[in-house]
View: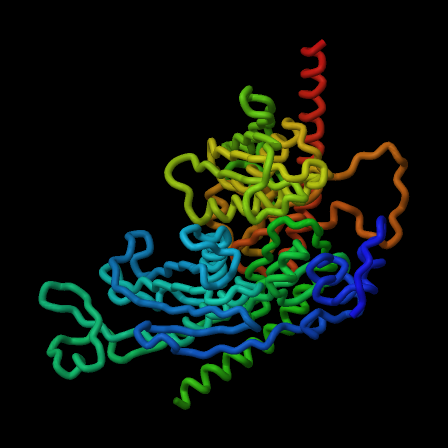
Length: 307
Length: 244
């Protein structure tokens, strides 16, 4: 092993020759990444425009009406939807509603301390509900039971189990998957005029008339698919890990739907500016990634149906 | 565009609401500014730089903290998101190496909300930072652009327009550079205004619609940037004459 000589005035690159890779990575993260990016490769052997391996599994939570577990590399998200009956508001009497919550428990990342909620959690929560509403993925009219009397409220809870970058991507993908898996339970009205859900065993026993005849799924219209890119100098790095996000500070999240519409371009500040050319490039990366994600989601659904 | 008076308040598509900016209103703060666009009014105060950074921030750089105060009620998710966007936007325009290991607090008080609240808050905080003398690379200018059903674009949305529109975007651009050096034609390089600092969108829109918004936004921001520059120069000359 070579000994490291820390000579006066010697820059990061000068020292690099005498240093172990891991030490160089920790001490000079920026030059470490610069060197990788200039060779069009990333420390985890991915190319700049390739995303990590993505898996979707539907229905991991049996007690929820719809659920999905999504992994993008190490980033893991669990989304679950619970339906409850509510009285719709007078302005939108024939519509249901969706309440989104995003949780980052301390197990997900060393950055989150117990007792102190993560700063990004409410931000991602807001982003999720904005995108779900903007894309009109779920037709809220389908969540209506009896116009003006009863409709569904879908409580969508997304839990981050492991935070390793591109949190919003994984969160939105899990939310979309959970909505595709969602089954609307049977409901009935009792003597007092209250609407309640009927579970499987009760179905034979109950003499009351069912409001909806069979369990149904929502027709998911145009599905939104997200891609987060990190902009570093002239490079565009797709699907960054937590380390990459921390070092290269400018990130841009693009959400496209299956019709090719732009649902969101989200760039909160950052050192780098996004020019028109950069945005166009990011959009074309998103289109490519969207095809892959669509196939992964379809496969997850078909596996579910075979079971 | 077509018709001239196609908006409820009689403005045409490209017209902004009357802008007003006054600085140095709060004498306990290190810098303050009140920015209004029609009935949307935001008061921003800057305290700092104060010694030390919060845990988890890079002590080699100056850090920022944004506190959003809604007009009424408690701070919600939407406000938390605005805080984060504002913080990262301001961080990107300030020189962070000048005051390492310091924290600058920006308190944003919403006085009136009639749409385009986030752009208004960004403009207000930017003026407040100038008032506090925080070293900055350039100013940031924010605008809201709405995409109408038939594809035309309107600027500086009111609250009722935001609710009715199919899609809209909040865009933040760096202000146009002013230099005594005669303009050298930049070879191939993008002129500075072309890049966006911050982008937040609502509603689905075609990709081309977004780029239309961007182009209109750049043009409108040049006007706002000119207004901001004039207002800053006027008030700073007032200050010096008072001091003398």
